[in-house]
Image (cartoon, rainbow, N blue to C red; front, side):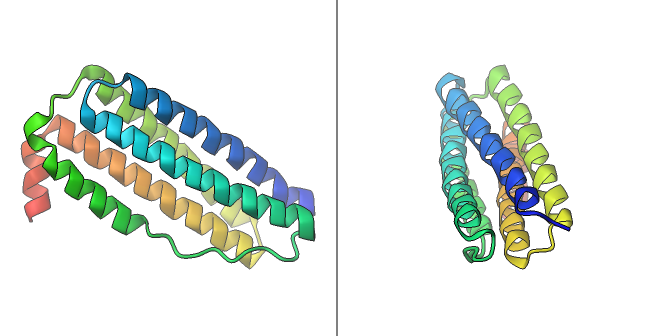
Length: 169
């Protein structure tokens, strides 16, 4: 039988995970060399703030209602955000000069986002509450978008010509 604590504990961990991610992204935004990297990490830090707010609201509802009245989760707009980000990336072509530290930061951030996605998928599979499952699906979709965004940045840094070629196709 699933207890209230079984439902709530992963959200405590998720909250810490998102806060750790925000701190990493804020630090990376301060320390990376290129404008692209700084903008990418600032965007991801804002995204983590949004996730933190949603997790806190969901967590509070679980605490206050014994998990009986959970908020509805809207559909993710991650695809639109990814497309808008890639369009902004196209505008940075002329001023782009990657640094090794930027590449390392992108790679580390990608590992972090993949780990968060795996964490949420694990708890999605364990949950039988439809609203909790929808919330986890929303988080997974968001984390996948972040991973795709970081992969796009890595491709842009490693082979800009190929990145533009694929965008035009």
